[in-house]
Length: 242
Image 1 (cartoon, rainbow, N blue to C red):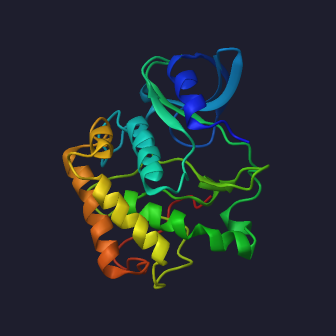
Image 2 (image 1 turned 180 degrees about the vertical axis):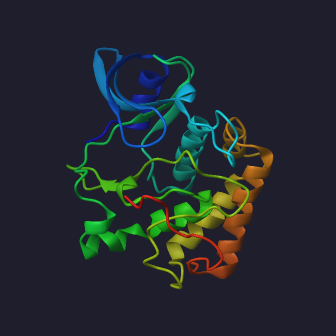
């Protein structure tokens, strides 16, 4: 079973990071590492800030922080979709996000999920709507091998104030939001109050306008009570889709 956050936090914050390999897919530099701490070794994914390619629509050097912000939102919702993630101030290539590596089968992804597994994706779809995910590819969602727990990764392109949602998952478009997901939206809005710890934590990684936009998206989904249809005035799918 994957290590729990209370076990990973001191290790990821203080442990020795050893490079083990590089993920060559994607435009930003991403590394497989091992974190050694207190006699234990934890596999992790390290995304250094200096390895981020400049983008015209996202602030420079902000993607690693957005990875951490999505973890915080996932935890606040109670869905635990995003593997444990923090911003490591020191690493082999400087500051960057450090995320727990989840053992999974990369050949089993959204485009060949069994129908029963696709039915489990409603929280992922709602999560992407909330964080305004501009790049939900089919390989970014998977199941941990032993526990069959659902995970979602690769969230650097999120939280823009403008509508940027691009995703391969439109399976539930037009469907009503389940009651438990609506309850989670109300809980998130309460946690986003300026005096709440979530708002404070997100302020380290997101601009005030981006946090306000997150709250506004949650409010709009509560009013709509349904999954939206794909937009007709722009591209709604990422490229490449996998």
